[in-house]
Structure formats: structure tokens, C-alpha cells
Length: 295
Image (cartoon, rainbow, N blue to C red):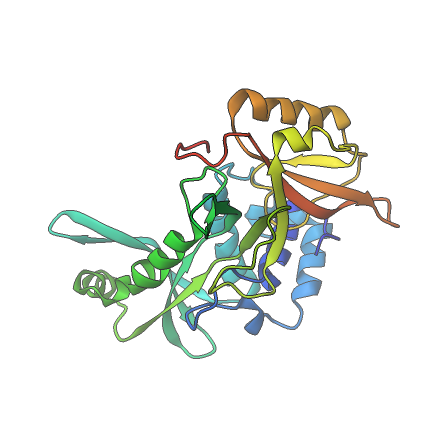
């Protein structure tokens, strides 16, 4: 998937086959519905992005969730041919917003209505000292895998059961049952010590990385490190130029100054001359995790 040079094409290719961070009957697998010529389509878009969907050439939203949502819209419509009936549909009752539905779609294979909740997540495993329990925190240490999973399964995916949702859908001409699905790809990042088992309800084939503290990172060779900025947390990183060692060192200095975890990729040069990601990892400040929002 990292053969593509256009970032949006590379990210779309990643989304087509990426393992998810949730094991549930509600999980939606795009791979089950991809057309047989998807690779040809992606290669054509990569060669001539101007001839493809606008998401390939527009400036990517630096807010990863919004960019991911934009890509999902392209995946479902331009690649898979599904019809989006509503996006970010607000559910209200007596003037109070109860939530929203990320996507309401028509499945062309079954002609049924589906509600899709989507998220892309990155969690770092942390063994709570003295507690004997492992928590999987987001880089900002506020978001947690167990909390997000519970919210998706018990709340977000269940909003179609609300009477107010039925009314909102009827207003759009959507009647009848609506099947809820969840799409949540991402990465889990493991510490070097202690060795952690992967969390319950996460498939064993999930994408993995590592994390370590800044003081440890400063003792490592950073020649082939590349800092990854959003929205390039998606998919495998690829670049034409040699890694900039000064950029890696400047990013490590910024971690100390700001207390903000940062994501890096380790790259190696391939036979085609491109530098491609072979590993990824977070470097976090010595105070991590703390209960402050560092995003």
C-alpha cells in the first residue's frame, strides 16, 4: 500500500484492508465489498490525481478525524459505489441534541439501510504501577481504548434505537430497519518493558508500534527517524528524500519543551529509491501519562 506517492491515495489504500481495533459482530469490513478493479483505480488516481476525486488534491484537514471522515466518504462512494443518504445527522429531542449519526448509507448489495460510526485511533499500552492493570491511552492520555469501545458499542452504534432517530430518518424518507456498523482502524503501541498482551476485544492481527520515553529516545540513533504529522498518521509513510536528522532532533527537543507526545516512523530506502516506513513509534515526555489534554 505504500507504493502510492499521492498521500490521499495511500491513505485510501490503507483503509481498504486495514485491520481494526475492535472484534465485534458490528464491525464493518470494506474488504468484503471492494470491486475487483480497486487496485487499478487507485493506481490511475495516483498517476493523475487531478482526474480523481477532489480529496486527492485538496489541502488535507489537519484535524485527523475530519480528514478520516472525508476519506471514508470517498471510499464508500467513489470506490465502492454506495449511496450516502445522510452525514453527521444530528439527533434532537425537545431542542436537546442527543448525538449524531456519522453516516447513513444504502448498501447496494442488499438494498438495506446502514448506519456507520467511524473512528481512527492510536493507543499506547501503560501498565499502571501497583494496580496490576493495563490501560490503553491515547497520546493525550485522556482518551482510552476501553472507554471508546464501550461508547461505540453501547451508545454511538445504538442511537438508531431512539425514537428521535426514527423521526430524523423519516424526515429524510428513510423508513424501515437500519443496521448499525462500526469502522475503527488504528494502531496499538507497546512499551519495550513490560511485555503486554493485546487487550480483550482487539483482533490479534491489529497494527502495532512501540512507545518509549524521551530520555530513552535521546540515547538512540535517529538517523532514519521521520516525525509524522497529522494527517500522515494514516497508512505507511513514504518519501523521496533522505530523512532529515535535524528534523528528528528538533522534534525531540519540542517534546521536552511542550510535553506533547510525538509520532515517528523509521524508514529504509527501497529498491525503487523511495524511503519507506518499516516501523513506527511514539516518544512521550517523562511525565506521561497524565490527566491533561496535550493534543
